[in-house]
Length: 194
Image 1 (cartoon, helix red, strand yellow):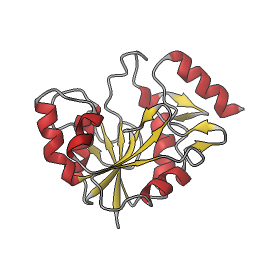
Image 2: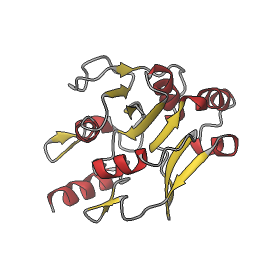
Image 3: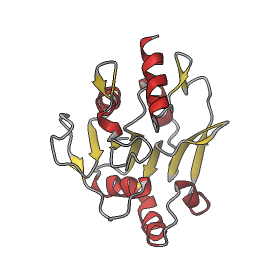
């Protein structure tokens, strides 16, 4: 089965105050780090962003948000509508510890469901998850109703909640670690050098 990967880079970065995708950790932009981990696994990698082609210096097509509502769900549905494949593996651009092992493990958990989402003791990880095109009408309806949380879709779709703490921690760090504020960035930089 073929999959498309979509890296979401259209967030407001409100708490950070600047575009998170271009923040540097270990001398590399966060989005470049995520792309470098995804590209060996996926033939098709898209970037969902409202920036122009080439903005990030990555050889991947940029898909614009189809609806002028700032929400990760809008990014996901935009990726689903642009993808050549029925399943899209969604990754946030600010997850520097994404691992090939975790990606491949999650890909192996696809058994026809609409959504395949990791679940840890902290909750769901919808920005490191797999979505089927069958989600599109439900997402569009929820966006229209301003119900913008991905988990609001779960009662209406088949969902495989994947729990595996050992695979979702890489070198003692959660692959879901993301960056929202300056303190997160400082911590990630320390972990990356240690």
